[in-house]
Amino acid sequence: YRAKQQGKGIVLFDKRMHQELVESISLEAELREVLAHDGLILHYQPIVSVLDECLQGFEALVRWNHPLRGMVPPDRFIPLAEENGLIVDLGKWVIAEACRALKSWQQSIDGTAGLTMSVNVSCRQLTKPGLVEHVTEVLEHNQLNPRCLKIEVTESVLMHDVDRAINELNRLRALGVQIAIDDFGTGYSSLAYLRRMPIDHLKIDRSFISGVEEGIKENDQIVRSIISLARSLGLGVVAEGVESREQLEWLRQLNCDRAQGFMFSRPVDNAKAQELIRKFTAFNH
Ligand code: C2E
Ligand code: MG
Ligand code: MG
Ligand code: MG
Image (tube, rainbow, N blue to C red; front, top):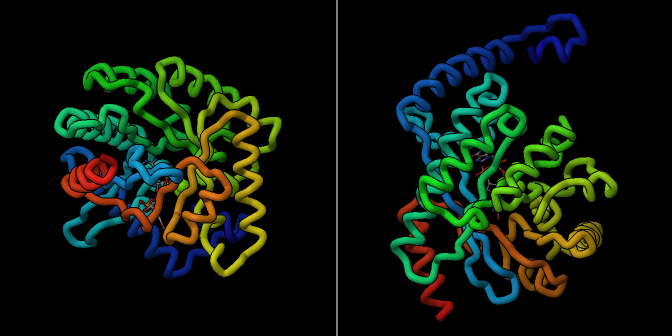
């Protein structure tokens, strides 16, 4: 498939491409297996309030714990799962597992009833029928407050099939689920278009957060603009990829609502996430 794109019709198929293709095929077969046998795991990264550094919730990030390859990052298999349609089942598993984890934390740790869980949903997941029904079922099964679930979609997801996307997001919001635009600023949404979107939060892409200590002026201007855009549209705003205290201070001055990044914690497994919750709640009291 890639050979055709690059060669503009002429099939150029070099050794490296061949190797990549073989690798993709074997990954695909293994991914089917792993899905059928619960071989994926979720890691969780905290999202923190900028003003007082209270824990707001977590983002669920899928990993494939491969016996030979080690931890395979999502960028390596999500695009593949999108291409072959496995993303639908994979995505359902992620939503169910993330909601199950959130409920168990809310039940076992005091003061966590308002804790939220953000889940990434890709293009094919949103436009295939059944997502809203699955979310409804999972929320009911776990007796979760729908406001505690946030669905993250990228701008490209929304651009792909605008009417369909708006329709699905409206149905999710009717359940009480919140919607965030992920990696905001890297896509091409126009302002007019953004206003039509049924969304609650913007997540500023981490490429705009880094470099601010080095005084990259453009990033400062972009982040200011995104925050003021969010304000005027009545949306919440989250900064991704916050790695240092300087960045957090800067975001505080700009009145950013929430932050997520290595400064607080890398994505961690379920047991470590519970430790983090306990640490944060001890600190808050
Ligand atoms: P994303 O949704 O934008 O997730 C944030 C990514 O940034 C995560 O990478 C996270 O580990 C990383 N990150 C967080 N804080 C920092 C930081 O301070 N510095 C740096 N350098 N990186 C940071 P990860 O886990 O590798 O995920 C990559 C992407 O894969 C995600 O980007 C998301 O688009 C996709 N993805 C992950 N899990 C799922 C899933 O369950 N379903 C779908 N459809 N996509 C997923
Ligand atoms: Mg995300
Ligand atoms: Mg992102
Ligand atoms: Mg991303």
